[in-house]
Each structure stands twice: as C-alpha cells, then as structure tokens.
Amino acid sequence: MNQILGHNYIGGARSAAGQTRLQSIDASTGEALPHDFIQATAEEVDAAAKAAAAAYPAYRSLSAVRRAEFLEAIADELDALGDEFVAVVCRETALPAARIQGERGRTSGQMRLFAKVLRRGDFYGARIDRALPERTPLPRPDLRQYRIGLGPVAVFGASNFPLAFSTAGGDTASALAAGCPVVFKAHSGHMATAEYVADAIIRAAEKTAMPAGVFNMIYGGGVGEWLVKHPAIQAVGFTGSLKGGRALCDMAAARPQPIPVFAEMSSINPVIVLPQALETRAESIARDLTASVVQGCGQFCTNPGLVIGIRSPQFSAFTQQVAALIGDQAPQTMLNAGTLQSYGKGLQKLLAHPGIEHLAGREQQGNQAQPQLFKADASLLIDGDEALQEEVFGPTTVFVEVADQAQLSAALNGLHGQLTATMIGEPADFERFSELTLLLEQKVGRILLNGYPTGVEVSDSMVHGGPYPATSDARGTSVGTLAIDRFLRPVCFQNYPDSLLPEPLKNANPLGILRLVDGVPGREAL
Image 1 (cartoon, rainbow, N blue to C red):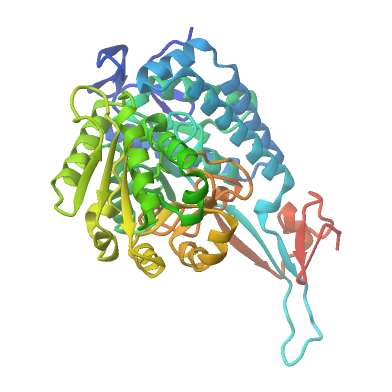
Image 2 (image 1 turned 60 degrees about the vertical axis):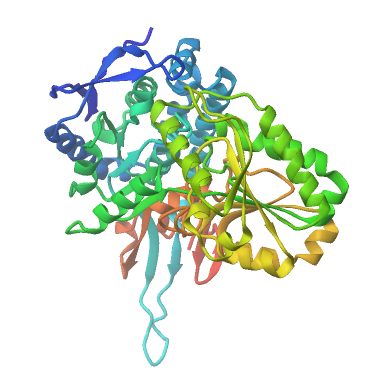
C-alpha cells in the first residue's frame, strides 16, 4: 500500500512546513478523498528551486547513458504501480481504467524512447569545424559545438492527462532527458496521483544514484508564481488554459533575467470535410467525427472544435446526421467541478451569440457534461470573431458552412494558430484543394489526412505544438523526441585542446555518435 503523506518533495526529502491543507476530490461524487496535502510555503518553494539548482551541475555532467538508465528506471517503476494506483487515478479524474492503463503505457513508453535518444546521442547536435591555418586572408580557428541543458525547469502538470502530461510525462520527461533537474507543481485536480508518481520517480532516482534534487514537487494554489519568478529556474513547461499560460509568459518575461516558457494553451483543431468524401462516405465520417468530439468527454488538447464544409445538399445532410448522433450521446463526468463550470460558461457564450445557432444537445445542467453541436455563420470566422477562436474545452463542436473554395481559404486565413488541422477527403479532393496544405502549414503544427486528431503518437516525427495561441513558441513541440530540444542550448568551444573538450567533441569520438565534421555527417574519429 502506498502511504500518501501529502508532503512536498524537496531535495530528496519530504517537507510540510505550511499550515494550509488541501484535499483531493473524487471527480464522480464530489467527496473529499481521505488524504491531506500541505500547501508549500514561500520558503519551501525557494528550497525546492535551490535543490534543483544544486543538483544541476552534477546531473548535467552525467553521461547520457546514466541519464538514460534513470529514465528507464522511472518507466519500470511506473509500470510496476498496481491496480490500487489505477483506482486512485480513476477516482480523482473520472477517467476509465482502460484509459489510465493506456496513458501509463504511453508515459513509460515516452521515458524509454527518450532513453534511446540519449543513448543515440543526436540530442548533443555535435558539430566540428576543424582549424584551417592556411586559409587566406584569415585562418579559421578550431570550432566545436554541442548542446547542454538550460538548468532547472519548472513544470506545471496538466489536468486532462494525469500521467502523460503531468508528474512524470510531458515536460518532466523532456527536461530530465535534456539534463535539467525539475521542480514540478502538482495539479490540484489529481494530487494523490501526483504523489504515487513522484514516489516512483524518487525510487528510480535512488536506484540509479541520481543527485538528490533532480526531481522536486510542490503542492498548492498560487505557489507557481514564486516558482516562475525564482532566479534558479531557467525555463518553464506548462499545459493548460490560455489565461494561465499568458500569465506565466508575462511573469517570466518581466524577470530581471527573462526565461523561456513553453506553454501549450488553446486550440480548436479545425476539421475540413471535402465534397468528394461526403459523396462517398458521409455516414462513416459523421460517426467517426462524433466519436472524436465526445471521446474522453472532449477533454483533449486536440479535440475537433470546428468543422468546416462547403455549402451543398450533401453537407446539409451531413450536418443533420451529426446533429442526430450528438443528440444521442450520453452525458459524461468531467475531470473536476472547475472544468465543468468553464464548459458551461463556454456554452453560454456560444448560445448568446447572434451569429451562432444551437443544433443539438440537451440543456447543460447537473454534474455531467452534455455533448452539444452548434452552427456558426462563415463571416464570423472570416472576420476573426473571438467566439470561434476560443476553445470550449469539452464535448462540443461548431459547424461552419462556407460558400465555395475561395471562402474556405478566407475562413482558414481568419484562424489563429492551432495544434492540428484535419482534412477528410478523397484523392480527387486533395488534388482540387491542393492550396490548403500550404495554407494550413502556416497555421498548425500537424496536418492530418483522413484521421481524427484526438490521438498523439509519441515518436521521433510527432509535432504537438503550433503558432500562438496553440503554444507560446511555435519552434518546439511538447510531444515526440524533438521536445527535448526546448530545454537545450548550444555552446561553442574555440581552439580547445582535446583533453579539455567534452566527450561528444573529442577527436576520438569516444561516444561513437553521429557528428557533423567540416559539413559532412559521420561517426569517424578525427
């Protein structure tokens, strides 16, 4: 049995100096769970940040193989958590056990994949330009570059993925892979889950002899501000609302030393249904689209919040099909009361808008979320009306009917940055609408053909990011192995003797990694 203490994790020890007690809530019943969690004091936040800073020199100078062993040990510990753990996560989030087991597998899979990247060594980005003493008019010095971890990272857990985007997954995994110790701010919606996972990370750290402050965790509301403003913190990872993400970005930018924030904040993930596809398989598209809208009660960052089609009898019939299916969907319990409340507010905004019509869905009341379907006038999208730009987090979507191909491009031009865009079409559609890819590339991080955006594969090629407000920095991704790059920076050594160079840059290439030498990639010793 895992003993839940509810104390903060600082430098490998537990601390409960504060007076404020927090409780975790059963998402289905609203009852408090039988554990208290002690909100971190300003002094504890300071101690956690300093513990991470003290661990940083030792942790970043470990070999990549040692860090890989740490990540693999975390994966093993997560996989070993039993049914009791799954039951706790289910109680805190109202998510089904199968989903939690799948998410746990994804989180440990991410750790193992990142360990592979570390062993492969490509994250170093090793580059060597050898000296050209004979070059005229000026000789070239010996120049060598590799990448190191930025320093301690503050990570904020997401509400909707208690494992994959929370204590161990997402930004924590990326930061640890990059050689950066972490101070994790536990999400108030699943504090008991966070404790189980934090314990697993600490066990892995002890087994692999990591420095004591490599992972720290604090509980509480409002403690995040102290963390982001702390001079020891060198970067922030965040998944949550646009309001929360913006506040962190502004806070980090206002510091005496501004630091980068990688925030994933808001996305409505448009789905474009093209004419030929509707001719051939409208029924199956309606079914699959509805399933994607209500999956996980619509609480995915990639939930399809907007569906766009060109005016035709087929699109009108398709709209009716989806309306009937949405009307038949059962209500679902959301992650917590706060999420349900903001879902209700989002629906009220849509219902009150004169250019938006309600097509299907029972009135939102009680303690579960009712799936809804709306239809908005195309001009709202073209003119950049805020109502269609704001994500309504939950099982709802908005249909937009455009007049023709030109209006479709105009409507997509009016969109803000998104995580994903989807095109449902036949080969003839993709030829006819070939301009859409170039347009969508500028708007999103991932374009899908004939799939639905609610699954995000953890792999080398995946992008889960996109232009603002999908993320605060479109140059990175929070899923996939490229996520590690966000917490690295390049350092160049000029005219260094071989004996003083870091391992990735030594002449003999002791790590056997792929390097760019005088513009040519290879693994050879020099």
